[in-house]
Length: 150
Image (cartoon, rainbow, N blue to C red; front, side, top):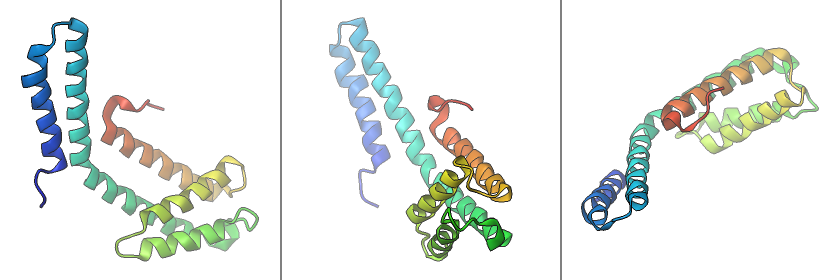
């Protein structure tokens, strides 16, 4: 592992602000801003620590969602919306090791667009909406209170 790690760098920045910068600040406003910066750095460190589990859960859920969409069959995938091609790309991307998350997310964006435009079958839309809800919940858990609740 390369040292210092990103979390160690963030911790070092927090200590520098607290131990070197804060004693020099006389303005309550500047002190408050410094404390806000310390809080943001702490939040960033927590997010970085939780990110690997978030990424793994996101990939697992994308794979499961695309597998469920595949089980629905072609009759549920509208030809005009291009969902068959998106599903084929997503299936190839999810079979890679490691999975091509960017391609999987791009395919999900195509599905979400089709749902938003009313071009997706209701059974497809249910799977896509359920995935989007779970993904937003994971993002909210990862980022904490910085995301609004639906």
